[in-house]
Amino acid sequence: MNNKPQASIIIPVFNEEAGIENTINRLLSVSSNYEWEIIAVNDSSTDNSRAILNRFHQIRILDHSTNRGYGAALKTGIKAASSDIIVMFDADGQHNPSDIPSLLDKINCADMVSGWRSKDSANDWIRKPGKYILKKVADILVENKIPDLNCGLRAIKRELILNMLDLLPDGFSFSTTSIIAFYKLGYNVAYVPITTDPRIGQSTVKQVKHGPQVIMLIIRLITLFSPLRIFLNVASGLFLVGIIYQVEEIARRGWHIVNGALLLVIAALLVFLFGLIADQISELRLGLIRGQIQKQKNKSE
Image 1 (cartoon, helix red, strand yellow):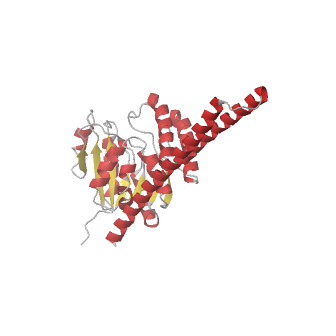
Image 2 (tube, rainbow, N blue to C red):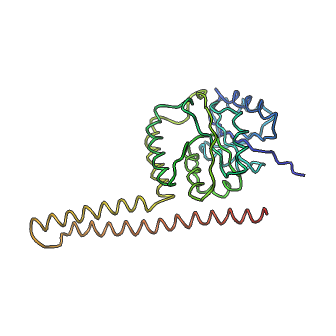
Image 3 (cartoon, rainbow, N blue to C red):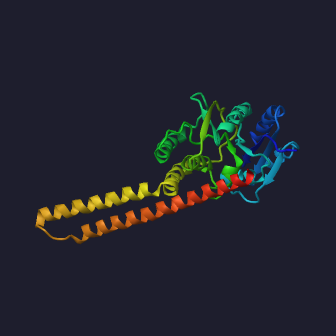
């Protein structure tokens, strides 16, 4: 007899006392019609979030002894989940639980199903420039247009995400990195239109840090999935500057080798070779993940 729930709803919780009660109540009202497991991962909240969670005996509560991050909370929930299907769900009241069945309906013909937020959805205007740049970079990395890069409402096949947790970050960029990883590993990603509400309470993402975080995330994504792209551009720039420098010196003083130009060309060659090595390491790592997932599939069959 299979007693597995239809889906495990994972809710990362860090200082969400303003919205978590409303979020859980809305989830429970919808889940009464389904066989869902609700897991709240308390990421060492310093407010009353844990006390509020204690009021709900219908859910599982997991705790971090220290604040480890949004991604780390999701990883803890994914590892503890009983279902073969994981649903990521934010604690701040933005998501509508009635959208979950639509995601689950599509998961049979996809590996990940993400929410696709409409124009009417609540959006934090201060993050729009960073998200726009990040999306453009992601589209180039996966050679496809991603409708919604970082929506926090997703349904995912557990066996796939479980084997790539070491690749994914512990911080806020878990959502972005995971969807790019699914594309790069050749898995099928589908989308369901949703509308999100304004979040309840203050965001735990510091706006002052958001810009540098986005820049670091872009660099990390490129080096993780397509390192040759950045190394090749740097190498090309160094090589071009070196050649221009050499040509200018020849035009001014006649034929001779300019040490500075030679160093730039050698640096360009070294950067290019490092890029090739990094690209091979990236492909090997992704290949190992593919192998682990395939081995897991063979065992389950």
